[in-house]
Image 1 (cartoon, one colour):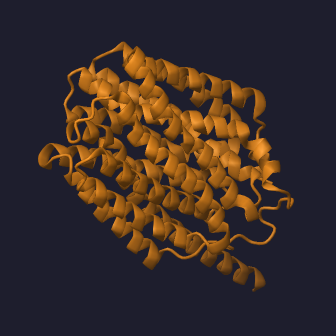
Image 2: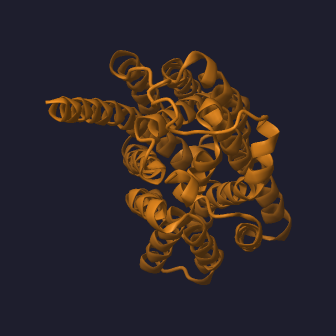
Image 3: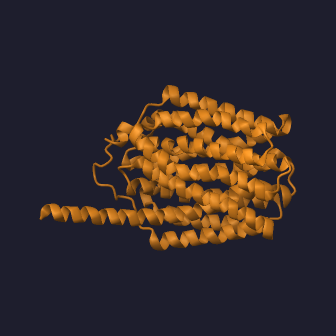
Length: 403
């Protein structure tokens, strides 16, 4: 009888966790759509609507997104350990909606930067809140939890980029940012009404860890920080400069967004698989393969002007990104004790998203002075350095995850 009751209790708990995870992932899809609209059209909006011609200035749009998102990740990750995950998620949706409203009405570059900063603040808040909540809902399979999170984020981003391209062609470049505002508001309401607080869901002792200072863990995490940073250098290349490179080849907005959507599509679809695989086989080897492959794939964009081949290159780069992106954050979660999980995941996201700040400025300056293809070669070198940092300095953590 006791065994039967215990089994029923476990089943009820599992059903509850599944419903909570579904709610979190729904809100994350909406946040991903918002992100996809922003990342898909920001550089083209700056060029076509605001008449900005400098690659460095255009890069500043992604850069301001990166610095605000980075700081928010760090602050909101730590704050979520104190006030809970839900308030962080709700506030993020509200702030992103304000950002969309500002950009949709912007007539000057300063308005574009302000709106982008608000989207960075809101996105950082929503993403870190949901990411930490997912590890609490599925604590025994961190890789799978992160894979589902990334599927929602990048699946939503793929939808957002495709939607943005359609709206831009049919109704102009301002309309997608109005839609961004509405979707963000819907996400805020949905998270307030349907997403419960997840802090404290893990059973006591489920994720044991010594109560030591944050610095102790940061010293272990720096290879992951650098690899994450390099991934956003790559992503900022795709967001800021790949669209400009493709339009320079004579492609229209529809084809440009198709190439970009191919990247996020394969990235999104494979992340649950790569996360789950890393739970079983380990994180490190998968990360190294993904980083090493991306070194070559980034350069491949500069070797062809054929639309079909460029779509294939984009799909392949998304596959490689899936190999390292989810296992990296799973590595961080493996190491982090439950009482510091929000803080340490936030710190990882801070250093990772600093690539969004440094990348566009660095790559934009190189493109202005040495040509746009130089940005692709530089990104490849950064990814190569990240490959060696993981291979040489990172230790396998999957045993920690399964302990």
